[in-house]
Amino acid sequence: MERCYVSPGVWFGSSRVSIGESSFVNHGCMFNTTARITLGRDCDIAMNVTFATSSHEVGGPSRRAGAATSAPIVVGDGSWIGAGAVILPGVNIGAGAIIAAGAVVAKDVKAHSLYAGVPARKIRSLSTAEVPAV
Image 1 (cartoon, rainbow, N blue to C red):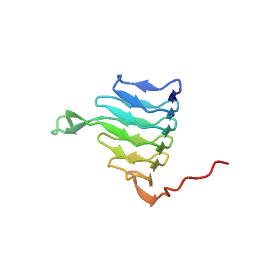
Image 2: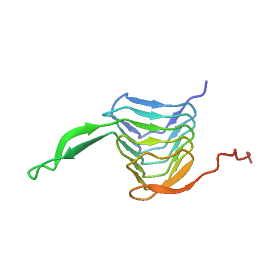
Image 3: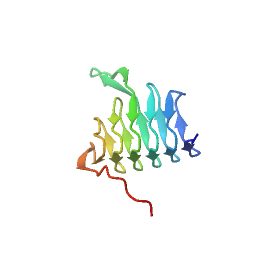
Image 4: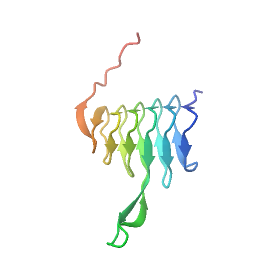
């Protein structure tokens, strides 16, 4: 059985996080766990990535942060999330996807695709052929 690796300095809001085998979470990541967060197998999460499962509805003029909301986040097997990315509530990231550094992901991500920007958008599809080991 393989294990995952979580660097020191990662913050977990609760135990509602599942990290698949051989996945790596770098230091400074934050897992806001109002809802469940699931990372698949063989995922690589760079430093300072935020997984935010909670937000608010828009409130009235006296307090714009209205009623609290939450939704789970799922990251598919083999995905890579770059440094400083933010994954917002309810997002599903398809298997083998890459999220560029600094991206803000507000909508679902297609498998084997590269997403970048604020808000994140699809840049291109990625090959599904295996790359030979060097």
